[in-house]
Length: 84
Image (cartoon, rainbow, N blue to C red; front, side, top):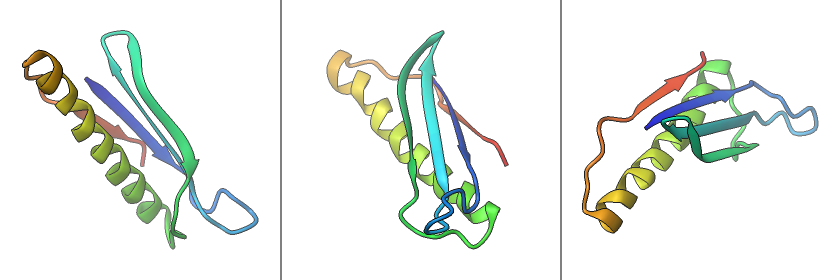
């Protein structure tokens, strides 16, 4: 499983909140994706990327538990790539 995440700093002009997104794929198929506004205002682009990476990592942990619970199989390590 591979993950990708990205965020912009103060992308929403109204409230200055950053917009972030992530996606996860297994092989050539996308299994999970999200794009939304962050809950907190980031004071720098580094902070915005860190918050996006944190949310994507939480999703990766949840996704890794699915095959264990359903199929009793463990997955290989998950790589989460962050555009910074």
